[in-house]
Amino acid sequence: METRIKSLREDKDLTQKELSKFLHISQVAYSYYELNKRNIPLEILCKLADFYNTSVDYLIYRTDEITAYPKSSLLKSGTS
Image (cartoon, rainbow, N blue to C red; front, side, top):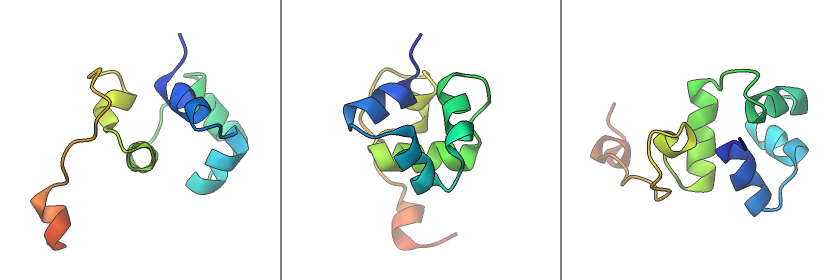
């Protein structure tokens, strides 16, 4: 089964090399994520969700809804 991160990457006509550069990881590491040979760290999942304007839940098949969730009011105000 093709992973969602691969499908989204191909939809944007990006190479693994281009996306791995954006994520500051090696192309090999990124390819392992697409092949399900390595679990994707939460930090990378969040970057991918933001990049594709979707949710982490969509990327990990917890939902089929591609639309991103509204941003948290905590994130909007800069409060931690």
